[in-house]
Image (cartoon, rainbow, N blue to C red):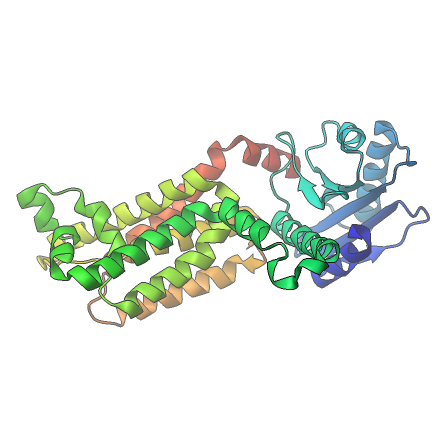
Length: 354
């Protein structure tokens, strides 16, 4: 079932199929501006036999094929599809660009010595396999009614992948509802101004202010951006690094705001998650640049345009803390780069592409 639908998926993603004389081997390629990405798909059936040397030789032939066509930079990812995980893992050997797909469980398997992503393909394949698994569950449990099929598993998968971002959104919404009922006391206790830091030493306001919102429009605009962009960033860098990024971006945004107040002698109180949200957008831009200008099917140019447009809207509006936006954006961008550099899997991935 996986092999039958994989070709449609890759075609939708812009890959072209190269026919092979051997039915077990197929490879797909997609041209980029200065390089070509290749997916080498092996249908590892129970009776199939391939040695490690033969596997390496095939990848070398694919590389040679594209270099003869003038592509000097060729990136190849092997996809082994089958049920014998042990043999497939052994065949991969030390190849960091070799992933396994368990055809029995419709699950993508990526081990520690393997690249954590390949130009956004990890998320695409995981979503594809989740969809196939739901169809399979529906066929097996059709008698129980479609409304309950895979519902628990779906919620579990979403929460496992994005629990940190879901938690941040939930806290923001909960505190807004609490402020709606309690009123001004919570805003007075948690808003941010440099005078609160200098005169009262209330440093906690750097953190509390990023969870408060002035009205429902303010909340919804921030939370929509945070939910959709944050899910992508969290899935790529991990739960706890994502939480660290959020708090650092929000905090540095408030520090920039404090510096602006001191420079201009304009002292105001501010609230909102905008600095942290801009930090998440900055992180997405950094990831897109790291992955050669494209990440999660979004180009760096589009992300940059969205950020510039958001900043423009802020600078042309009144009562907007633009200093917090700029500070959060810069911190998120920088933090994502540092997280990528210090994560061992990223270093392996970079080495494999070099």
